[in-house]
Amino acid sequence: RKEVEQDPGPFNVPEGATVAFNCTYSNSASQSFFWYRQDCRKEPKLLMSVYSSGNEDGRFTAQLNRASQYISLLIRDSKLSDSATYLCVVTSGNTGKLIFGQGTTLQVKP
Amino acid sequence: EAGVVQSPRYKIIEKKQPVAFWCNPISGHNTLYWYRQNLGQGPELLIRYENEEAVDDSQLPKDRFSAERLKGVDSTLKIQPAELGDSAVYLCASSKGTADEQFFGPGTRLTVL
Image (cartoon, rainbow over all chains, first blue to last red; front, side, top):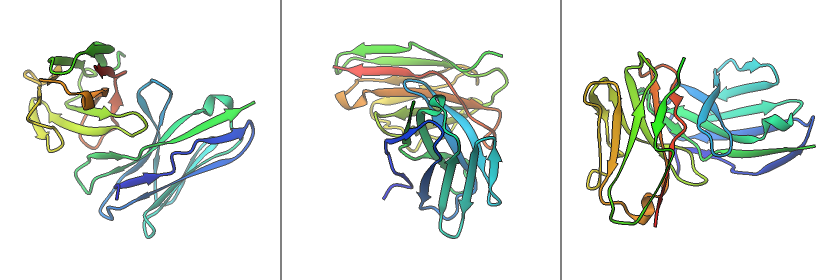
């Protein structure tokens, strides 16, 4: 079983749609959680950190459920420019080592 | 501020040949990482340096892979000899410290024929 599991998609949605991605992780000792965005043939970039209380950044909302070891990312009012792969990332125990999921691909269509 | 610099951006070699990748981290970043990203997968850590010390190389295939960061700044990752399965994107990242945000370079796309 992979340490971080994501549905690879692709998710094809129209502009303006709301879309949600989910991720599960296996190591209950993981301490930090993130969503990274990776455009085609580009490097990953930090989108947002994920906190137990949930956090929002504009159209993006991230949630963490430690009991279920589950992380989510919600994108409202999708834009064409949101088309990318979204990587769920957790730290390995307390080492700070990042463990990446395989990513979920989003295609926003006009 | 300049980001993480990597070279070359692309490399095509025949199997059994050696290859080397170079990374220059963001100035002031003490922690440097090498990742490998296979097609359709997320990056996987190969090795992490704190200054010039390799503190986590558990995922580095040591029979053919080697890395160095002699002066605690630039780093090189070498594969000798390369195998077909080594075709991937090799990403370098850096951060101020282990708990800080990691910034990735553009990667080197390696194709082994």
